[in-house]
View 1 (tube, rainbow, N blue to C red):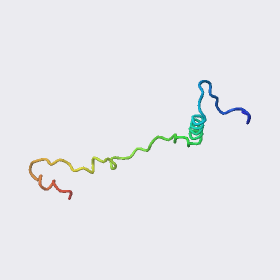
View 2: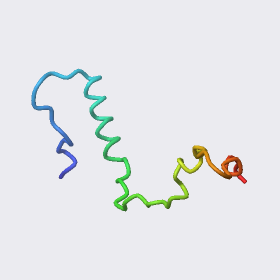
View 3: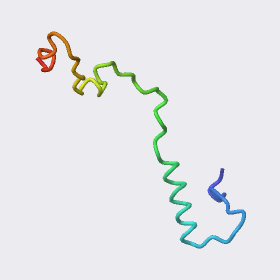
View 4: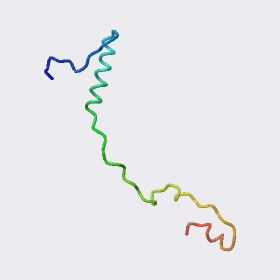
Length: 71
């Protein structure tokens, strides 16, 4: 590609200068953005499960009052 060749070309319609500026800025932003990381997201263990931070339901029966605290 030489310096005289346009980077893109409008093939139909009559865009205003503002519309051309918006399209140009969008294309430049996309071209300069970093590529997405090809590595998959790291899996975390069960320790990160937010459900473990919730209080468990009480089950009635012998010793249930002891199980009603965090100790």
